[in-house]
Image (cartoon, rainbow over all chains, first blue to last red; front, side, top):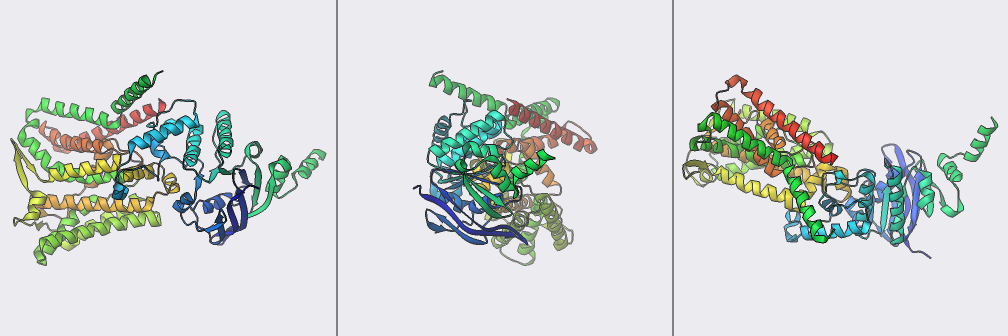
Length: 260
Length: 334
């Protein structure tokens, strides 16, 4: 049986009088891709922000490898091995690829100087170049090139590679295929499969149900701040998942439409 | 392609990048400006005129260095000109009216600057009001405070010789040039800021915060703390520049530094730092500071009427900004 990596129990989060998360519970296992789906306002973003430390939770418990943990900041999440790649916001476009790859974890010399410590450029460049080769991005990229010279797909690949580089246990992808062309989307989805093959656990947030069926092992459905269903991809179909998202029987709706 | 050829190609690519960089464009324009002024009036490059320019340059240049770091982090500070006035006014009031030791007075003056910077930073980061509005309000508060406590009259500055006067406004001869110690302050702070921005871990954070704050925060970068410290650093350097100026001219005026905030921001953006954050260059700022001072000085020397003076300064700044925007677009197309 595959080992549990991350477990959430009865997570609650409110913003004023709005209950964005109501007792959300779920478990992620080693080496699986789990899709988190739901309509706008279902609570997907709030849930991943809670896991990644952007919004500390109001109640509930988080466990990593069975051990209870507290996540109150992005740094806590990163230190626990949870890497989140937000849509369009995971890289700094004006920085070089190498500097982006190591942002927040810069290799330095004379570390006693703290934030004033000089960057170890040799280590920075060699690790970045090695990573770029591993990623296998078709276009030859210089680690010193700024990110704003890259395509959307290349940016996502680099952000995901960065998470892999630091041996993240859980990689959260927030709408990774948004605003990407067809070819680039397939590149990113292929990359997600590689991430799983390398043993990482992926939580994949998307609005595109077709992408879910292409890469996910399991699907978790959220509605109005609650987790309402959980299915393995092998045991469900597109229409069922859409019905669960909408909270209505889609096949009945389609039948009715055909009758009329 | 062999590894050696690949390396050579990357190196030549980097050189091409450097030549197309904003700071190189600013440097080229500076050389043209200097050559043009000296061609029209040979006195422009005379030791006396250069000494004159170099007396004033470090005071604005020091503020521009701090502003470069702040702008790179995506914020700016309009209160620097007012802090430039208030810092020395407080020091001189404490030393002359209250009879406090000049060293202690300087320390209190710097603490006031730290407090101003901290208030700016805390309101911008914790309450989320734009730095334009916060520092504009602070400009009015600080300038108003300087005017009120002096009743609008300039204070006679500290004229007794001593270690602080030597440290802040001492002068020395270098061949035919008469220079001030403030030049050493400017050089030392330039090296420090260039090191921070280009080589230190902090510089990577500053650029990342300005380029994409959410990405930096998601990577665990303490964006708010960095910004608050940068606001403090900017205020402290504005106060220091004000004290240098007050000691040099032996007067602390409550209206000193009026309009400096815009001149300092102009120096920074003319040098190639992006007003929108993410891209900063200390070398560019030094070039920008030289350029603006040279233009102000040269325009007078070549006989442009005083009232037309700002037309030329504004036009040259505009040309530089258009040039930087074109360079930026070109590099995005490549």
